[in-house]
Image 1: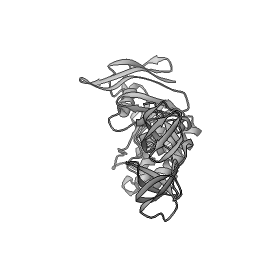
Image 2: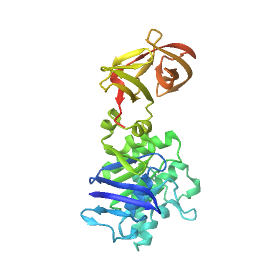
Image 3: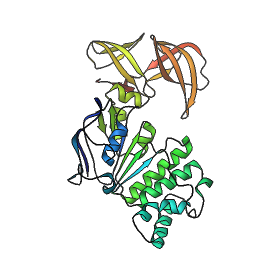
Length: 331
């Protein structure tokens, strides 16, 4: 088990992480989400031993790693930059770590072939790196990381350079490989699609602090924090609440919040374009996304998004609000 305990990291006088505590159970994947500057890459690098904590501890299966240098931790790192060697073949790239460890050539070739098979690159051992697509190069980087037999795999925005279709395929393959191989992993990303595709648990960092931690389904249903809801792509609306009734413009709906003005997250489908609805809106843009039409709307002086019928026109119309899809925010 990986245990991060009250971890604080300062760069000079500036805190990058403040008292972060989290655990990763064996054979599971933790996704760490956050905006740029949230501290997620610093957390990963501290676990890897590339950044020294100001205070706190990183414990691996009961052993405090403070005195263990990065090269002795046996943790595999995979970054957005593939960092493949162009003068080596695909198989030689995969086996590079084994070569540095003194493994004999025949065994290196066998291991490289096995892991290339695992990532779907059977028969690629003798190919040149520059003959591969970006997705194939990232698979080689993954095979190289796994071939070294790491105790823990650390991935920092590993798919950021890939297009959506290649990214989705590699995400599915990673989930399959990690599950089949019993790998423990920490996966850093700002993309909630990636996090939800691979993770058993999700941790969200904001300004160096851990603000949300849980299974993906619970975080989706109850983001709690504005920063979390924003990462999930939920529009934030301001509503007025009086005696258990929320109001967004002319729309009124039950909402169990104290009297006053509150930010809330509008989950997908919380607002639906409906000419007969009681919320006047102006459709200012529209796009086809995930099989539905999403409209950008002006409503009650705020810019939000709404589900809309295909072919919705720009201009004034009405909308309905489903309070069951409104997420309360605690902060």
